[in-house]
Length: 335
Image 1: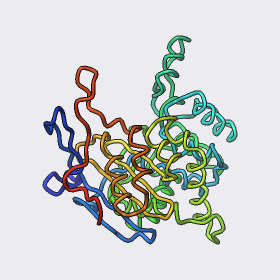
Image 2 (image 1 turned 60 degrees about the vertical axis):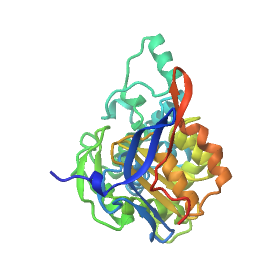
Image 3 (image 1 turned 180 degrees about the vertical axis):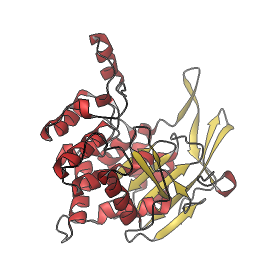
């Protein structure tokens, strides 16, 4: 069976302490690329294939724009989001669908409850059921449907890997990553997910920061719009107080987490970091990514320190802090 890198090819990226005892160790791989896509630093096996999961959403949104979806501002940002289902998030998704002449019955992602507790409790109290619109990926799916409507493609099969839209997504991923897709699978939301290396993922994401709205090429104009929308509307990308949104808002760094321990970070100068925790845990991936941006000189230490509380790095015992999630021995302070 094919797969990603193995433990003996990984680096120690983080440790978890409890009362001075290292209770757990997170192994993984990571890479830092420059604005031209060159590798500045790497750990583990960043050339191995991974499924970026939701870290692909900027590329999927770009493909939707290329297919003719009419999205801008918050409506474009929600297409890139792993949102928490607040009323504001849900209203944007419904509006994307309505502008395309559709409604939420067209969504083929699974039913879910909002990730935001207050929103979830409100639905339960009102007697409403879970629904696809509340899934964190519903904005991406709404953009897919808007693209299909604009291009005259069938909406009933928009999640099939051989659908024209999904072929366009795969081509867009390969073009921006500078490498071929190595495997295709079904993501948690039902959409195709395409395996590339961490190097390719970091390189692809760097292109969003370096693209210009004045480019003579439409794909780079659209990439600039994807970048601008997320930076201008950070609350849409995840949710107020959540790590991705906090990092975007406070540092001006595009942050996008993906399931199974994936994290990408892109500084305004195009320096990009892609991280994959081998055990699939996301609890330390943002910490590692920020440290690598700091080591690359792409962010300042004071700025990085300011967002640490949003990462929930404390380890509790009896309701009180007794330890912390810390950087692993292989993560550098400089390089």
